[in-house]
Image (tube, rainbow over all chains, first blue to last red; front, side):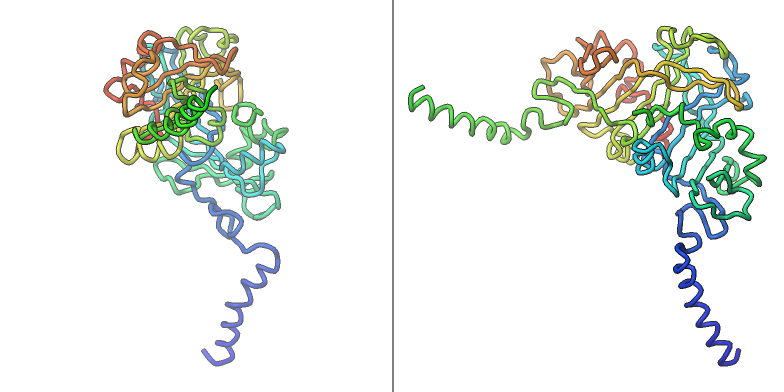
Amino acid sequence: MNKISKALLAAAIFIIPLLALAAGEKPGSFSAYVDGNGSISPPKDFRGTWAHLGTWVVTSKAPMPGAESAQTTPGAGIHDVYAQPESVRAYQKNGRWPDGTVIVKEVRAISWDDLPTGHVMYGGDRSECFVMVKDAKGRFKDNPNWGDGWGWALFRAADPNKNVSTSYKTDCMGCHETAKDTDRVFVNGYPTLRR
Amino acid sequence: MNKISKALLAAAIFIIPLLALAAGEKPGSFSAYVDGNGSISPPKDFRGTWAHLGTWVVTSKAPMPGAESAQTTPGAGIHDVYAQPESVRAYQKNGRWPDGTVIVKEVRAISWDDLPTGHVMYGGDRSECFVMVKDAKGRFKDNPNWGDGWGWALFRAADPNKNVSTSYKTDCMGCHETAKDTDRVFVNGYPTLRR
């Protein structure tokens, strides 16, 4: 490498990040869970530290109460939903999710038990995690997992760091399109948001 | 009031709290939710700020999925359970609830909906709140709502500040005696505690 090349390389190393900063945001700096290409990483410590929005129980095709094998029924599960506490406070105030909000829906198998209070369902092993990252600025226009105001990801327990969604339109909108009037979030299931 | 009475009164005002402090604990100082007589007040802001332990769905006698009126079935409900984040961290480390831990089980009516993902249940209106306060020192021996290591309370939505439990042995142990091997808490239903 000659002296001119070295000088250009050194200049580039300093100048490119400065240009990015000048443009308003460093690539990858908008969320701890999103890199510069829009790849989404799964949050790890949301249980016990984030705010619980509410829990869905999907009972489709599930055995009736008292049956033994709800765990193996496709589609059935306990769906616990969490978001960062500061995002929940903001939503409670003005009904909008702040830029960078992360919502996690953790899906667990349904476990059953017979307790004095009756037949009960509760969360068994985790099967998958859905993640949405609020994007108020339309970043990552070329990434098919971003659009309609959010980044979208699905992580399965077998390979928990790999986003298996390849296109939010085909992999996520089948359900979330229904919630288009509430920014694609099923807020009516979340008692924590009702004030 | 003569001078001697005034002097005695003034002395009492200063001396009694000092004696209480010397004994190791001011009455009522052990928990923000417990007064000097062991009366328990309901925590208000646990949703969105406390740690979510897990959610039970009690399905006893509930209509089958797709039925219209689960809301009115006695005993059925979505039971969301919360505790203070610092108590959860301590339990995750050593498997014991610290003195002063408060556990809240908020019971809501079951709402149903048909969404693309299937028949779903979620939390409707709040019906009642169960509260347990960990007491590692055997305080309030004369109060029938304290014993077996906890203070016990039940607040109904119709009168949300009144503990309707008159004796934990008759009002709470019918269910919680079953969990005596895990300090009267049904920890196996709480994924947040599994590490």
